[in-house]
Length: 324
Image 1 (spheres, rainbow, N blue to C red):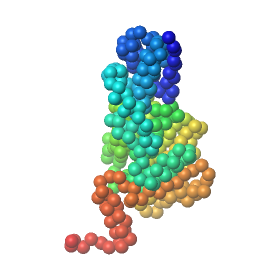
Image 2: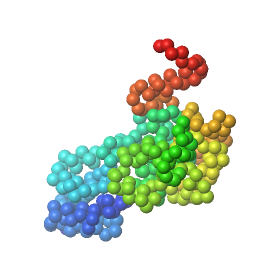
Image 3: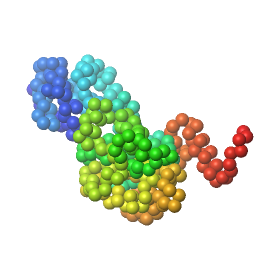
Image 4: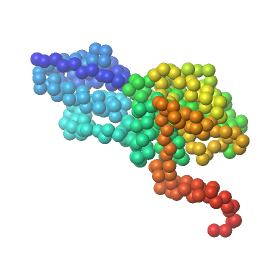
């Protein structure tokens, strides 16, 4: 008889062990001659050498599965117990560029050289400015990093915000308070979160404000400690708003600021806080800057051509004559 202890680091015990330790119960049923007990974040295995090795292999596969999908179901345990091929396949060497796996197991990782630079900057700096046109993945990758940090318990909460600036529409006619008015504008953020966190868990996080999505005005007066903070559409901040936001950063926090300097919706005489921040802070140590371009667009292939056409059109400034 031998003993082995498996430690569950950076793992939500309820998501891994299940209600009333269902994961352990299923393993114990499959290996009745061995003793398998959970104590806090440790699992004790006691039995013959061959069974302990086999149980340990299954647990390592389940740990890998958890980090990939975010939870363990009773069916998953049965799959790994009965299917050696699944065990081998799911413990295969992973692509080290993967940030995390989405709810359907799809890997989320950088797809262009500039996106790879963004990933490195976020790893190396506590504050990063990511600039670029629509479709370059700057917001999606930023959300993925925030979710990964929360999952790995590197932060206690995620805060995602954006300025309440109207882009050709009137917020005043929308129902509800300021947060409810701006929620439709945050739809891309919600979509990204749904790609990365199971629905029930995301709902739990948002109800308890572990994930908070709010207008920029709600940040005033706060100190954001032990959090991953994302400011989206930052080109529509004023200089004072940007300064207010950046100075909210507390201990053990990371910030990513994303924006498209070609899509400023502020009044024509108003300076963009994003432009001013880049000018003032570009030489400050510990702050990273990356500018993504049309070549980083990862939506439909036409999106890149559309962006290039509009960019070219803005330089010629010719009016449409009605003839094609």
